[in-house]
Structure formats: structure tokens, C-alpha cells
Image (cartoon, rainbow, N blue to C red; front, side, top):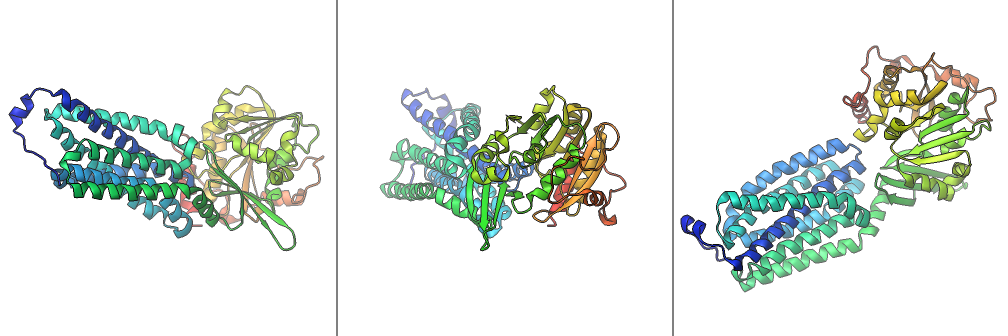
Length: 530
């Protein structure tokens, strides 16, 4: 198998450096560099996939990284008996790592789409990949010392320098190169191919003479098999993703794209009577159904338009549906819409289904769109608005929790003109009452006075809003010149301010802040029961 020789410590340490050994040592360090880059990409790919599918970036990162670091320690210990056959063992580990790491995103997406076993699969995958990554360094150290013995400190310094620099390159390559060029599934497969090439290339070139002919043939055959699986998976990755995505949605998918921020999916179902139900999903979360979205958007927009409304700010709402309601008032002169993901706005501007729904709102000359993070944009904003509509995704992740913080609502308050009103979508007072009332407490902590209300949106259930102003609590009324509405009138809106005793405001509750996002804790506990 291998012809590892035992060397005497003193003589080897004192042996002069051989120029012939330098290219071999460089090859080992380059292999360590590439393997480290690949290993970090696998870790980041699992974290990114979890944030897309589950939405909890911090939780997913904590699970993946802690499990993989633990497993790396186990893998390093498990590699001790393999040091006797370091070359063959390293090649076998790299093949296994290339196969599992390359297929990791695909396998986990399949577990999520068809088996509802994403979390158990993630745990197993993190442990296995971590163990394989942990076994690399001990074996590479043996191979490095086999070329020329040196003192332990110098050998460790060389190896870890290559490992850490490789980690840097892998960490930067994942978001800025692999994701934009290949996407998650195919990006992981490309890295798997690179991983196999680096590991096998080192063993079958630098240490070729240490291997028997039979072992070389076995490794070559195994590498061809792994490479074939990865190449085949790459070729069918697009078809797989379409099939897996469709498995997640009840209705046919008519548009899907992965943006730098999220997965955007549009579905549409046509009934026998000819009625169509168009639905928009962001990272798997329903944003609206065309069947009843008017109930949500009429309730959100029109109570806030009762008063001065010359200038309006819409935070979120990239689908243009809230914008549609705002533009029904001819005395509105200026509307700024701030949306993080420009792909959502582009879809709403270009897709015929969405243009029909939003009445081509983005073509109105009164509208100006800004592609920016709402929090960062508000910090730089100097304009004051009569109406601010905060139409953000629910606070179910660390990324969105900051948009429900005292600090954020303080910026909203600063953006209001004298006598201005803001309205915030606040989730469901029925399914997540603590999260809903936490929004009110947080608004009040930011210096705003509030008027809570709720409406029924069949696609979502009971859904709640908070109307707010910097002065007295705003009256929950429709404007006298409100356009014809399908779901709201004066009696309905008065009733919307009444909450049943089992869903009424709790006696005490802490506001949500950047440093202590209590709303995220409430949302996680309450929504997991549904």
C-alpha cells in the first residue's frame, strides 16, 4: 500500500533541506489550501441553505458551525490509526468529502422538499462532513513530514498557514463567486469536483511511487465514479431544483428565481370556472394571494390616508399592491418605495400577472423606487412624509427582527412630518398574539402613540396592524374621500379595533431592540405550534 519509512528524530531534524523536496512540499501545502477552501464552502453552503429554507440565519449558523467544529475534533482523533497509510487514507477521505460535500445542498433540499426531515438531515450531514474535514490536517501533516522531517512547530505553522489562507479564499469565493455564477446546488457540486481533483491529484502524483499498482487503479476508478456522479448531478441540477421546488407548492410554479437576498416564487392556479389564484412566496413564506390580497392592502393603506397625504413612504411592499392603493388618491404627489431586493420590484414591473394586480403602479410618474435596506436608508433620509407604510416580512429571523425594533421605529418616527401617520403590519393577533402586541409596545417605546386593529384575510387568517403617530393616538377612520373599497366601510373598521379577551393586550411586555430582539423569541415560540 504505502512505504512509509521511520526516521530518527535527531538526524532528520538536522538533515539539510533538499531542493528536490521543495516542489513536493509545496504540492502538499497547495492541497491543504484547496481542501480548506472547499471545507469552508461546504459549511457556508449549509448555513446559507438553512437561512433560505428556515429563515433563522443565526440559529442555522450556530447549529452547523458548532456541530462541524465538534465533528472536526472527532475526525482528527479518528485519523490517528490511519496515519500508517496516510496517502491512501487521505485520498479516500477526499473522495468521500467531495461526494458528500458536493451533493450536500442537493440532498438537504430533497430532504426538505419531500421528506420533511431537513433538520435531522442537516445534523447528520454537518457531523459527517465535519469528521471528514477534521481528518485532513493530521494526514496532511504526516505526508508533509514524509517528504522532509522538520520540527513540529515549523510544520504546524506551514500547514495551518495554508489552511487558514484557504479558508479565507473559500469564505470570499462562496458569496461573491460561486453563488452568483452557479447558485447553491451547482456551486457545491463544482467545489466537490475541485476537492476530489486536489486530493487525488496530490496522492497520484507526489506519492504515486508509494502506492501499489492495484491501489492506484482502485483510486483512479473511485475518482472516476465520484466525478461521474458529481458531473451527472450538475447536468440534472436545474431539473431537480424545478421538481423539488414544485413539491413545496400546491399550485404550479410560473416563475422562480434565486436572488442574492432570497428565493422568489410565483405560483398560479386556474379553477374550472376560470378564476385564477396568483401567489407570491419569498423564501417559502406566502406574501399574498390574488384572491384576497385586497383585504390586506385596503386595511393597511386607507386608514393611514385619513389626513395629510401629499408625500408617502412605503417600506417594503415591492409587489406594488400597497402602492396601488396609495395611488388611488389623486392628491398624493410623491411616493417613495424602498425595497431591499430589486428583483421583486422588477418582477412587479414586468410580470403581466403582477402588473394586472398592481394596476401597473410602478409606471406612475409620482413613484420613485429605491433598492436599499430600509433601516440603512432611514438613517440617511432627511425627507419627511405625511404617511409611512411599513409592509415588511414577519419577524421570524434575525434579518427581519431589526425591522421591528425600537431603533427602527425611532427612525420611522423621525421620518414623519407633523401630523403624519405610520402603519405597521404586525402579524397575526390570533396565531401569534405576543408577537403582535410586542410590536405595539415597541412602537410606544419609540415615542409613537398607537391604535391597533385587525382584519380577516382568509389566506393568512386574522391579521393585525398598528396605526401610529407622534401625537395623539390616531383615529381609526376612513378618509371622507376614500375610493370605493371592497372589504372596508366605517362599521367594519370600528369593529376591527375590538379584540377578544383571549387575544387582548398583555399586562406587561418588553419592547424589542437590536440587542434584545424579544419579538423574535415570541414569534418562534408561537408560530411553531401552527
